[in-house]
Image 1 (cartoon, protein in one colour):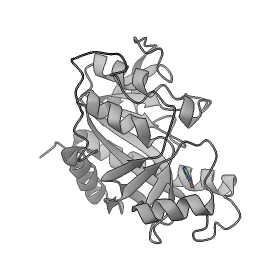
Image 2 (image 1 turned 135 degrees about the vertical axis):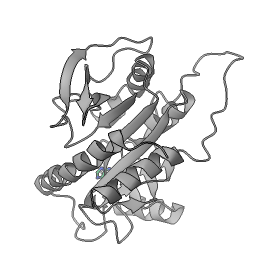
Image 3 (image 1 turned 120 degrees about the horizontal axis):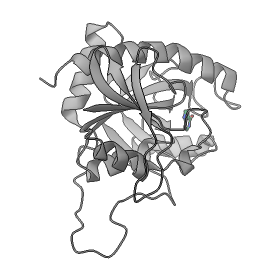
Image 4 (image 1 turned 90 degrees about the horizontal axis):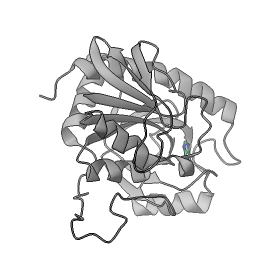
Length: 248
Ligand code: HPA
């Protein structure tokens, strides 16, 4: 089964025919909100709003472990996550949709592994390719079918937040090879890998990163929200196709 984790601007899926909602519990606490079970384009999916339905949970307080653990408990094997980002690379302008292929972790103090006790059974998750190539391909093919421009690949810098970045920080991320910056990519991506879930992200550029493009003094949140909601319409159409498009 496929799950969709929605971020800013995507706390609900308009065309999801909801069959039921369920509050989940896990050994790691409660997920961000009730899971919505339903069908999208006649395919079963589970939808979860990463920041809660009222967007009340900031990125550093999201219970990423509970979210992914509970999804797996429900039989989920594919997870498409939606995340808003700031564009560092010049061509990643607001409104651009990207499917990243690499990630760098700058977060700290988050519960970043399921192996947090002394236990000989721990494994070193293979994070060489952090995002599932098949699921990435499925998203990109779907975007092609519904004729929504979508960039293939890019490096996501995951920052701690909830504050935005200084220009010097963005310069550093760029030197490190990052193309976009967001606050929720980690530890979500690594935890999905630990649970052997097929995981990929649709990143939506909602602003120029600090010091890039028109962002010299800080972002205009109204503009960010308007860009996010307009782009989410396009993300929805990609998702509707991706649920029915097989992995081949
Ligand atoms: N920086 C960090 N996270 C973000 C940004 C940004 O500019 N835009 C959206 N999420």
